[in-house]
Figure 1 (spheres, rainbow, N blue to C red):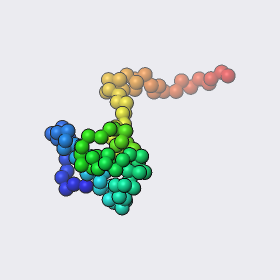
Figure 2 (cartoon, rainbow, N blue to C red):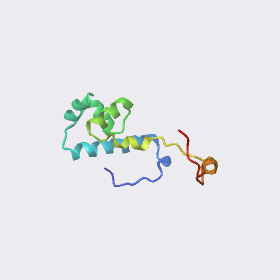
Figure 3 (cartoon, one colour):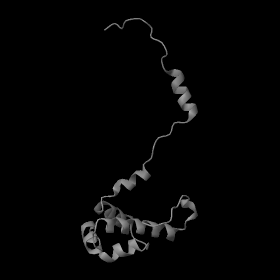
Figure 4 (cartoon, rainbow, N blue to C red):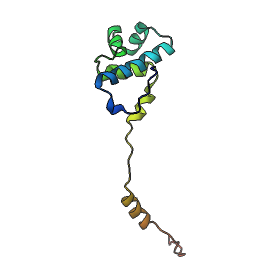
Length: 109
């Protein structure tokens, strides 16, 4: 990909982010020894659209997803996974309501 390591994505402008994504796509395409024509055909987009993507130009989100799927790198979507976060107060309330002892009584069934 690129030699630069970005730890602060907020400091990058939109063009730089798009170029970083394009470099990611190009890197994986070349790693898989695929031409732009082959990858574009597999992804169901035009070669010129793939070229635009690799140069960091504007393409649709759908095109990007199709290319990621064709490269078998959809694992990057894990970065967008939303996880439920429980606040410390809510967790404390849940813990308070948990049983701490057994009653010793048998259930009647």
